[in-house]
Length: 81
Image: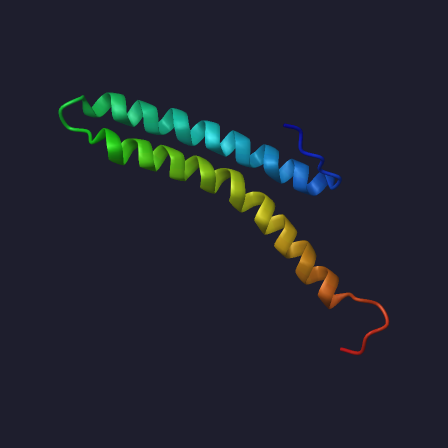
């Protein structure tokens, strides 16, 4: 599956999200390994992993798109304020 992203800012935000998701996954995995098998709930760990990765991948592009949408509404030419 290939995504066509025509906006460089959105592409950069998605790259930042991927790096953040990688850092989140590695950090959470190291935390889980330090806790030991008897102290960690694997269901809670996997939900935190999946949730964190989804947030990291969705928030930066949504922020950029939302910001662009607001700026377009503010600076729309030909409309009275």
